[in-house]
Amino acid sequence: MKQNTTIRSQIEEYIRQSGMDLHSFSNSIGMDPPMLSTLLHSNPLDMSIEQLDLITAGMELSEGKLFELYIVECLGTTTPDWERIRPFLFRCAELNRHECIRTVITYLVEPTNQSVSIFETAEFLLEQGWKEAAAIMYESVIETEESSHSERLAISYYRLFQIYRTDGHKSFMIAMQFIPYRHRLPDAYALDGLLMLTQLFAVKQKWDEVENYSDELSQLAETIYLKQQQWEDPEFNPARPLVYYYGQGYLFKAGSYEHRGMFAESKKWIAKYADMSWLEGLDETGLKEVQQFNMFANANLLSIEIKEGDLTRVAEYLVFLKQYPDELVDGLTTLLDTSNRNNVFIDEYLDIFADQIAQYRINHKEGWSNQTVTYYYKEPYYTYRFHLFFRKYALYCFRKNLLREGLENVLKSFRLSFNINSKDGMVNSMALFEMHRHHSTQEQQSVYSEICKEVWEHEENLRPFGDAVYDD
Image (cartoon, rainbow, N blue to C red; front, side):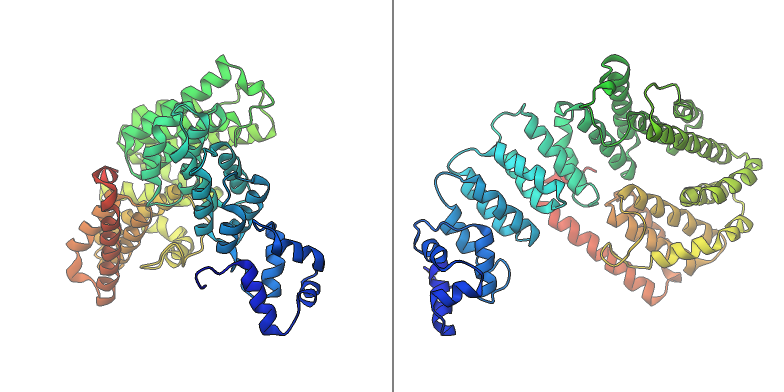
């Protein structure tokens, strides 16, 4: 648009070129002619976003085409008018016009602190599912909130962590910003915040951190239940039943010991979530959670006993995996890990689940990205499970001298570990590929090089944020 262009001049130019008059144009967009005339002659321009949309459509312009002018003429006043600002921000979010949201925020924060209204708007945007737009608003609250002890500030960090928790490349940096504020959250939010931290560090395979945050989660759940009796308060509304957080704290703590090979210690914590029916106030949803954790406990005890070398439990484990197919990828990982460490082959077990393994391979083609694959999971922790499965499967193939098949699995593991930004996973995958490179096809080398390039470009893009980002 030309300099000094206004909405009024745009309308006048359109009317002139189309051969209409103001009255005809008003009728064509379904607006009363005196109203349009009054709008155009008001100073400053007194127009709602709904009226702007009617005019934009009548001028045959794309949706949002006049937003930049609207910000200057209708919103850039010294006194923020939230009756007009909110509908405009909602429309920007709906059209993904995030640059306009940023511009409006600049107008708002310069003359006066509007963090309360910005925060309330962010909460509404998030509730509607406009996550990126909400993130912009929460970032503004963080930048302008005057009190470091403000609950709004803590919730804003928590919300950003929520929004970006599935982004393998942003979640860690945002989590580091959230951690100092986790104790300032309302308890219902703190439960989910601690669970997200526990899951994040499990993906990073930082088991000491997993143990730390799983302890905090269990202790908070216990405090709420046993000491505060807060679970009886009708205004206490966590996202999941309180028993869920109880169980998750124990589940991840047991898992942290299992992954470190401390099997006896892991069994102690498995017993904690194996039977939680003693908790009072369990409704139907809570009882289902109790049953789910009992199933997890049985599965994890079987898994540990097999990893300890008791192969007599394999038959029972196979029955369990057929009954609970959602646990299959973890079960196969357990079997592969046990076979690799004990130098035995388990083809007869893998053949039972050949169709599912074949589907895993299809769903995880070499070199796929998050944008090109549709699959049933979205959470990084589930991506981590498949990354681990393909790595163990690669080692199994190498032991059987199935070198190219092993390399295919290495590449799948490499891609998945990059998607969740698991440095340990990427290093292991790169080492395995280089050890067997001379057996790779030209196509496999090309895929490997492409992923390496993505890793390098990602690390280069992080450099301006400082060395602390790399310590994950």
